[in-house]
Image (cartoon, rainbow, N blue to C red; front, side, top):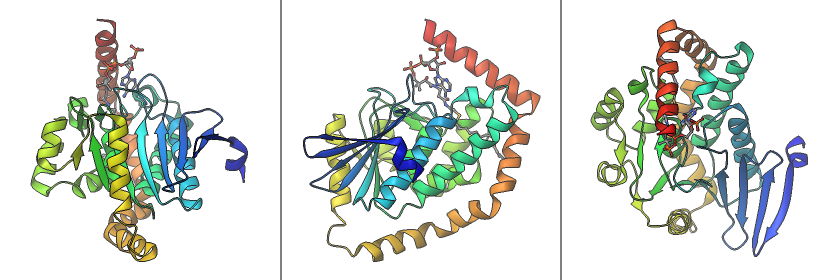
Length: 279
Ligand SMILES: CC/C=C\C/C=C\CCC/C=C/CC(=O)SCCNC(=O)CCNC(=O)[C@H](O)C(C)(C)COP(=O)(O)OP(=O)(O)OC[C@H]1O[C@@H](n2cnc3c(N)ncnc32)[C@H](O)[C@@H]1OP(=O)(O)O
C-alpha cells in the first residue's frame, strides 16, 4: 500500500514508532497496551492545512487497520494542541487546493468521529475551533491546566458547519453548546471541566496520556465488536448526515469563504494574530 511506503518504522523501547515521511504526524504504538498515540507535529501551532489533514487521515486509517486497541490524539507542541484550521488555506485561497483542503477536513472528521477503536484526546495546549473539533470527535478528553478550548468561529465572523456542532453536541448539553457557539466562547481548562467539555485534568502530558490509556483500558473486558457497533450506532445519524451532504457542504463552504466580507474578516484576523506574535 502507498501508505506503507510512506512510513518509516522505528523501535523505541517497547514502542513502535511509525512516522510519515513529511513528519506532520507520528504514530507510536505501545506494545504492552496496544494503544496508538497519534501526535500532531506541524510547527508553529499545528494549524490544520491540507498536508496535516491528509497525514491525520492516513494515520487514523493506519491505526484502524493495524487493529490497535485505541487511539490517543495529542500534540508535540508543549502549549498548543492545535490552532484549528490554518487560516492561510482560507484567505485568498487557491481554487483547487481549497476544495481538497475542505474535503480532507471532512475525511478526518468522518474517520475520527466514526472510528471503530476507542479514542481519547490528551489536550496538552490551546485547542480553538478545528482543534476543539478534533478533541470533541474523540470519546474522552484530558486537558492540562491554564489552556483554552472552544468553538470560536463566530468571533472570526465565520460559522461552524453542522458537523462541528454534532461533535460539540455529543459532549455538551444542547443549551450550553448553543450559547457557547453563538458567543464563540473559549473555555479555560477549569470551565471546560465544569461544563463537561473535558472529562479530566492532568498536570503533565504524560499524566494526560496515562489517563487516556486508562479510559481506553476500561473497555478491556467488553466485546470489541459489540462496543464498536454500539458507538457507531450512537454516531450514525451525524455521520450519515455529512456523508449525504458532502458535496453541498463543500459548495456552501466555498461560497461562504469567498464572500468579500468573510475574506476581509479573515485578513484582519490574520493581521491581528501576526501583530500579537510580534509584541
Ligand atoms: C453555513 C456555514 C457553512 C460553511 C461555513 C463556512 C466556513 C466556515 C468554517 C470554517 C471553520 C473554521 C474553524 C477554524 O479552525 S478557524 C481557525 C480558528 N483558530 C483560531 O482562531 C486560533 C488563532 N490562534 C491563536 O489563538 C493563537 O495563535 C494560539 C492560542 C493558538 C497560540 O498562541 P501563541 O501566542 O502561542 O502563538 P501566536 O504567536 O499567536 O502564533 C504563532 C504563529 O502562528 C500563526 N497562527 C496562529 N494561529 C493560526 C491559524 N489558525 N492559522 C494560521 N496561522 C496561525 C500566527 O499568526 C503566528 O504567525 P507568525 O506571526 O509567527 O508568522
